[in-house]
Length: 210
Image 1 (cartoon, rainbow, N blue to C red):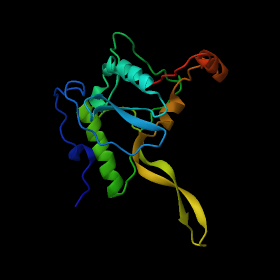
Image 2 (cartoon, one colour; image 1 turned 30 degrees about the vertical axis):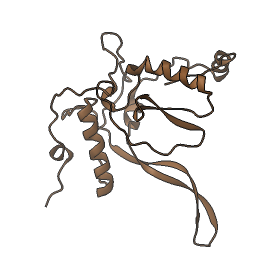
Image 3 (cartoon, helix red, strand yellow; image 1 turned 90 degrees about the horizontal axis):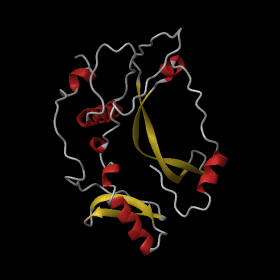
């Protein structure tokens, strides 16, 4: 019995309208957090969760939540909430080296557990409309699945010694773009230096980032 390909296994991608988390809030599964942060909710007691610092004062928490509630459309609770940038406003073009060669890399076999992880992730991206099937691309890059590591725990090795070990909390699907990056023309736009970033933060009470 032949092994089914991803194309045969994945369901057909159909155009459909998915309501945003603002219009139809979902009850999400909350994970345990470190002691210095906590959950806050932008709707009711269990919907539209955000993570904030536990050390904030009550008035600071109220002010922060008020700001977040006024900009809920800028926050994504699921993939379909990510609207992207209108191509009429901004587009990005990958410039290639003059002597580049296209690379078609074969997907390596993975064990059934990793196969299911990759399949679920691809179907999730298809449903959200973030990717679409294409069969004639001149570039093909393999998919890899790497472990997500959380905190540390202590285990006993073969010599009965206690050693710290990172905990694996899940799996992350990523694409190996090494061949494509090698053929891409380097962008020499200067990045800001760390001291310049720190100077911008000086004298400010809050630092917000996405």
